[in-house]
Length: 242
Image 1 (cartoon, rainbow, N blue to C red):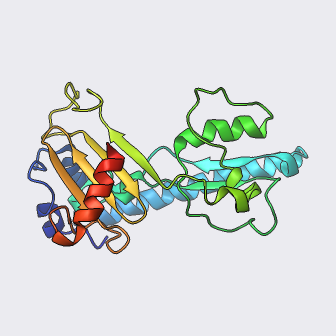
Image 2 (image 1 turned 45 degrees about the horizontal axis):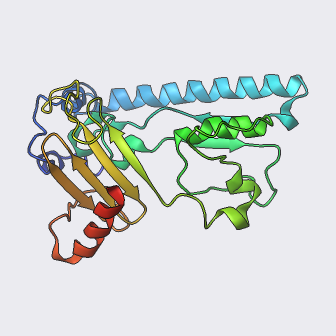
């Protein structure tokens, strides 16, 4: 990756040290000595998953259920493959928080079938999506929305769908992260407000904030939190975050 350089590692906040668990796992997986072998193994695993998904879909076809089955393919988290000199997950960089989501729905409109949608969907949307497809009304306390709205009611849903979301890696207090179960030098807590133009980070244990203009900086290389040109954007992001 273009951001898998020593300089990108040094550009991280001061509390990212060689003791950081993401850094430790990077050295055993995606540093220069190990990168080729580990990436090949990941692609091998992805190929095997693809084969097994194909077997399931063929089985459903043989059962005569293919044309009335909702297929959802996703996973739990992204993974850093050396970006910023790190491995694994936890942090709000795009490579860490984006996950695949592929939906094949027999109700899908023909003009939407096979297309890509860049609206923000979240894991909390999966349960209400499945319940609604089964004809069950989700309980009022359940978070998330029916993703099918994006491909069954495209005209009326586009302007009401979420435009941002809150990200949290934290096992402690919901505001200060006090009591977070990992030392800040090892696996720090982090919050973020994610939008398509900006992304705002808060590292609560260190009281450090960052701002990235992801629209022009998709790999989050340039922290503009102290830039004179982003004062208004930072104000808006902090207000929404609060």
